[in-house]
Length: 270
Image (cartoon, rainbow, N blue to C red; front, side, top):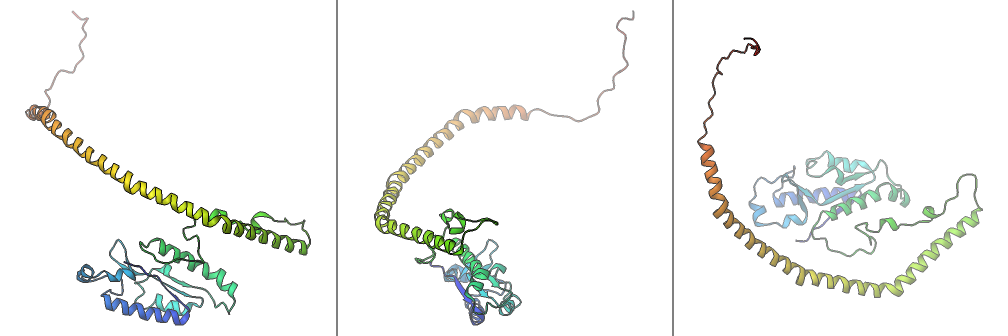
């Protein structure tokens, strides 16, 4: 079953998204708090899993993200009838509008949207798609993000001319991009082909060799376990039964101890 994440952006997007999720809940019998009163629909039809994710407590949470820099519309969802349906982290809002400033909107809320979307995709089992923008969705090469500020930095009190700094920055960026793209264009397809063949051979080894061998080992171990169980039942079980019968005949009685003369006696007195 394919899973879909819905991202509702802006005032119109948030309002339309809220109305759509109310309709989805009515269609699939999901209550405003995310619970389903009966499991009859869930047992016969699991199509709602495309849009809803089920928690351990049985609550169905929409796979949705609401985003708006102006908090008024998102606050209506937070305080509305279906406020318990969404997780608080799914409702993102800023403190004020970006006023058509791309950088202002990108660095205030866009990063949170990307992180939240990636986190939702990480919890999904079947996420289709091939992204040309996000080429490292699992952050496996996050340590290789080398920017100009990470390599060259002039401390306070010593600085080169502005033209020299800008020229050096452009040279660094251009050389890095050109060299990487040249190597990627020259060797990337060949290495990708080799890596594909290597992983194909590795998958073949696990599918056709390792897994059958592991299955054979499990079968043999099951036979050895059954043999040990028979031997233990034939040899050890009678011994333990006899010991149990012996200890069963022991009786422990509780009563007052006999009074004895605790006075010390002098053994050397005749």
